[in-house]
Length: 444
Image 1 (cartoon, rainbow, N blue to C red):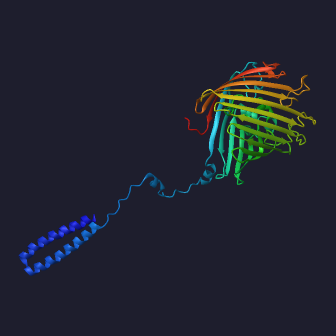
Image 2 (image 1 turned 45 degrees about the vertical axis):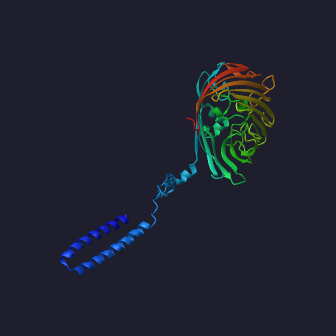
Image 3 (image 1 turned 120 degrees about the horizontal axis):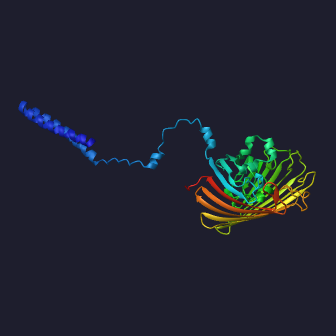
């Protein structure tokens, strides 16, 4: 632009010089004309010198267009202060998960008492809501040391878990819908010590409350009779590496938010994964378990729970669960009792969407206190239960799965109700379940 401006000025001076020359020659003397022409030539020479300097100078570089990355890195105007910044810092990174689990159940014995079908499933010959669950979970690590979990549940499963007589008598009615509620802190100890305080599900057992995380649709005898569902207290877990982890417990007891005695239950759970195919977890819980709600701290209960999982290949999975419990006051008046059981599982994936699973159990309630059939009521000693379950699972969509299951239970006692009055030694049930799972996933 500057070169163009100077060129225009030069042309103007030339034109002016010519015009003046003509006028001067006509009106003035030749001496005056020569002087003016000399002045104009000096000005033209100065202009030529400036033009040559501009031509020989290096051209200024043209600015490169701004990329998206550079535009994104360009500082923007500072946003206005967020009045909810404190809440956002706490709720940031929270995961919302949940499920809807409904089924149709059929019992060949046609029991009229809804509680006499099978564990966790009360009604016969109708559609039922097994579990509706919503969970907010903020996991912890070294960078985000504070977290929590709140899980609410509705349906037959939660009634079975929270419906113990002592809990219903002592807690607020709303407490029966709380599956878990605890805060977490990752203490700066070694690789990180996770501490949870509140109500949490037990670490014992091969199965959990949610059916979609189990291999079969119905729950096992061991899950229903042998182990606790939940605890109120504190636990601390330390993971040494990808092979070893240890969790310690200090709790009110079993299945109670409000303690019925002043004693506490302690325990230890050790996880060992020697390789990618094998996993072993051993859990031991012990403490003054007050089964009768009398405030007694004397009788102690000891539970040993072992879970072994083995995956020989991508399609086949095997699992075993072994439980033994000894209670010094299980039968009252200082009388001890014990029970033991084993469950064996197998699951095989026919296709990525279809799998079959089987479960066999044997439960020896030696003194009858776990199942409510004490040995002094019958001629036989205690109760021996066994069951076999076969399940077909099909994943209908990314978040939806269905299960069809046939199960048969047997006992040496007349333990199962038939109709409204009689009791028999066995029962056969069929369940068709549909589970919608809400969880973070890329699958639509």
